[in-house]
Every structure is written in structure tokens, then in C-alpha cells.
Image 1 (cartoon, rainbow, N blue to C red):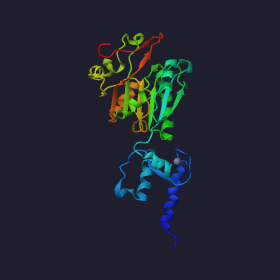
Image 2: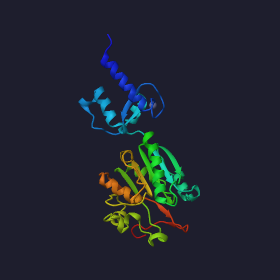
Image 3: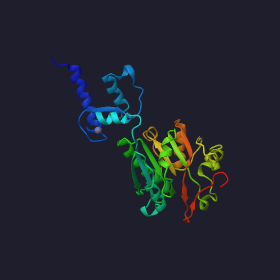
Length: 283
Ligand SMILES: [Zn+2]
């Protein structure tokens, strides 16, 4: 006898699988496909029955991905390598500081899978911040679709240390931010951006001098940051408004933990070509 309920379920399940593209989003395989959590949805224990899962996927499609059995198992392994999308934006390839590219090339990747995008599209004439957000959102869409765990953003005039990625990864938080000195030609100081009074991070300087990480209450630049999937899957980079400052405000409103990690100390290439290093403690 045909089990009508089972038949109906299989048909509905197949519809969902087709909506997710019909193949494993990691390896492209088409056998043994499963709808797997990218992020928890609160579905657990008793609620894990097939229909419960079906309705949960329909309700929270952005929190699931389609995986073959092997990729699903690998994804859920606690010590698996992370998949990281690096992003550098500039309105022109020639304007990416060569020292920035050298820093990225020298980056210690550990066993992680890292892909880097250089994005130069400029749909908004003369509006630098809007172009940056536009391109970061393009990368964000790729990171969402291709199940990246993190986005790492390095601005085109920022020079990162070799250990930047691994140190950011081992720091706990939803967004981890390095420290970057300001450009004296712009604001007449080489103090760190996170310390600027208008960025509202109390005691930032004291933490930096002790090289200890701290939770940010205010904002910073995009400079050199690691953004977890939890954050980029539901938060866009604001194209309109106050650019990076606006983004940090949204993060705080949503309750994300934004941590500054002073051990990731970057250099800033100034407009006049000088490399600005900032100062820590008695330097
Ligand atoms: Zn697969």
C-alpha cells in the first residue's frame, strides 16, 4: 500500500531542495542531500521530526544550507577548518596600496580555506563610502550563498601583520576589530581610530597599552575586521547614512558583541605615502 503521507512529505521536501539549488552548496554533489543548519533556529529535541524540520526551513531559509551527507558531517565538526572570504575594496585597482597586497599575500592562513576578492565597481560617482558599502554587500551576498564562516575586510590602505587572521579567529566575539592609527594628514593625529573621542569607546587607550582585548561600545573604521556569519547573514553594510559608523551602531542595537583586539595592530598608508604606525605604551 502506498503511504500517502510519506509520499506527500517526499514531494514537499524535494520542492525545498530544488529551491536551494538542488545540489550540495559546498561540493556540488547531488546524492544524499540534507538541509543543514548554518545557525541554530531553536529547533531541537522533540521538534526535530521531519515535518517540524520542513516548516522550520520554510520559516528560516537563511539559516539553512543544502549539503550532501559528507559535507554536512564535515561542517558540523567542531575543529574543522574555517571558510573565509577576504574583501578589499577600492574605486580603482591602482589605488590599492602595494603594502596592503603584500600583507594579504604574507598572511598566515593556518589550515583555513581563504579566498580573497578585490572589488572596484563604483556605481556612485564621487561617493567613496557608498561604493565601499556597495562592494562589501556584493561580497556579503557571495559569503551567504557559498556558506562562508567569516568575512575578513581589509581596507585598501591598511597593512596587516602576518598573524592577523589567526589572532582574530582565536578572539571570541561576533565581530573582531584590529587597531589602526589615524592619518595625520586627515585629522592631525596618529592615535588609533578606536580611541578618537567621537567614536565613544571608553578606556580604549588603557586597554591598548596593556594589549588586552575589550568590548567596543562605540565605533571604528572597517580597517581590518573579522565578521562572523551570524552577523553578516542578517546585517548589511549601510550604503546610505554614515558608512562604517552607522554599521557599528546597527551592530550594537542588535546586541552583537564587537571586540577590539589590539594584538592585531595594522599600519595605515597616508595620502602622502607615509606609513603610519601609531604608538602603544612608551613607544
Ligand atoms: Zn558536498
